[in-house]
Image (cartoon, rainbow, N blue to C red; front, side, top):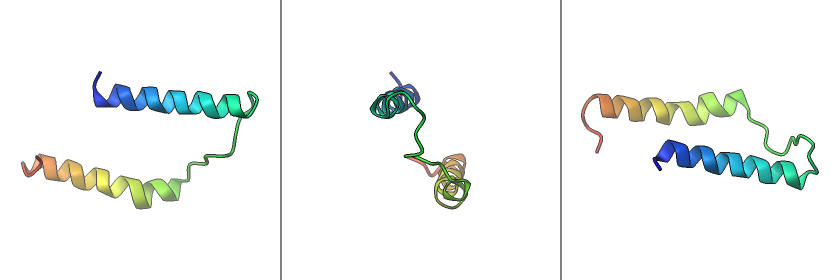
Length: 58
């Protein structure tokens, strides 16, 4: 299994556990913020892609 499929399976299992823990109702336990994505998660993704594009990744 490659890394992306493993990450999807882990996320799916985590979601099912949270859903079952709340009795089948949706949870606001994990709220995803756009600010969180654009400030903290997107820059490392862009920098990593640029590093691999320039041949420095390793």
